[in-house]
Image 1 (cartoon, protein in one colour):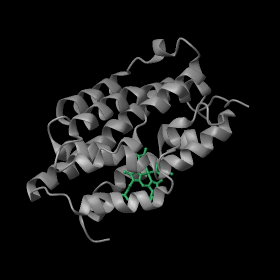
Image 2 (image 1 turned 45 degrees about the vertical axis):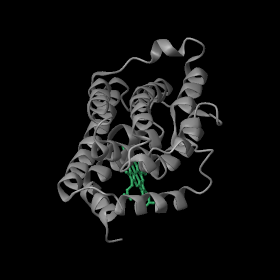
Image 3 (image 1 turned 90 degrees about the vertical axis):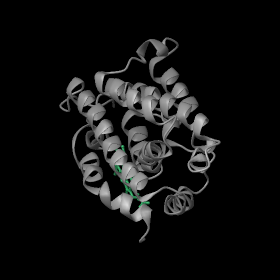
Image 4 (image 1 turned 45 degrees about the horizontal axis):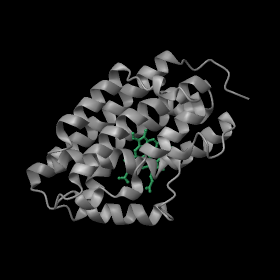
Length: 217
Ligand code: HEM
């Protein structure tokens, strides 16, 4: 890979390594986050994806970013059904943003409806991640918490038969982006910020749900 997709991957590599190896998400894979922590992460994701997918609706007709806004990726319905399973009928009462999620959601709302570069940056960090490491995370949490698809629908993309092929098309789209060099720089910087915003959410949840608790049997 030599195009913009490769540049973007390279530019966010150290942030990615941090996400993979440190803190809350690594503990999630390791099976030491208590069930309430997993449910809280799912609730925070719903707040983030509601913003991101509202922006996707706006961007669907955009000549630069429209192809990224593929409804097959949409996660909101899956997150809502996971929360109904994890919390029961009063699940909506648990959908309260922690401070880091509020900041993340504000950033999405402020920039992703109007700037294709910002939208694609945030889209890339979440959905390409969900189609990559997210697949492993989904399998691990299903095993840790004894969940079947109820509770982990977020991690399954029913409308994407072959995530690997989808990611190849996605990277080709990144390579073909019709943005000026300055706007591509904005996209790279915003992607790094998106990782930081995610890391702050994980950090906050990690403090609330420390790692020395025994996971669900
Ligand atoms: C333990 C957690 C994680 C693991 C094991 C993991 C693993 C991976 C792997 C193996 C890939 C490469 C897939 C490929 O080349 O097709 C990848 C890509 C990616 N991951 Fe993660 N990941 C984790 C967490 C995260 C998080 C928390 C985020 C963002 C919030 C994220 C965002 C991404 C993105 C954007 C890519 C695409 C990189 C590119 O090729 O441009 N990952 N991940």
